[in-house]
Image (cartoon, rainbow, N blue to C red; front, side):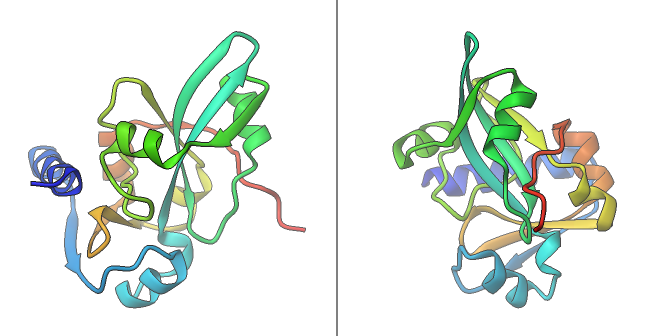
Amino acid sequence: MSGGEEVFQKLITLLQQQNAAFRIMEHEPVGKCEAVAAIRGTALGQGAKALVCNVKGNGVKQHVLAILGGDRQADLSLLAQHIGGLKASLASPAEVDALTRCQFGAIPPFSFHPGLKLVADPQLFGLYDEIAFNAGLLHKSIILNSADYLRIARPELIAFQRLQQ
């Protein structure tokens, strides 16, 4: 079983154990937010985009899984400030694999690694009753009740999206 398949199974087990309202969707393997939203029939903003980041400086060295809407861009300097660091950068492919066991584009908005801090932009949950995400695999998505996500994943809610100009 691949790392992505293990993550998918872990997610399904967790959501079932927690009585979450969710559904699984199988589709063509795509990792781009716009393309997968069209396939799912969801709004682009419902997509829970997951960015694996490194925050450093001020004595901070933290891996962060940062979640925001698929129609939004992250402000990494704002993310770093919220965590207490000076700068943030996207993690390397090797770090992403080690921390999530998933490939780019298939990272779910859940952290199963003790060294990966989970944060989410609250706007994602204020706009939609459900969020959608690739569930460890590019060809499987989960559409999950937003309140259930917040209850189960318990991300730290911080605003870190880049303001639209």
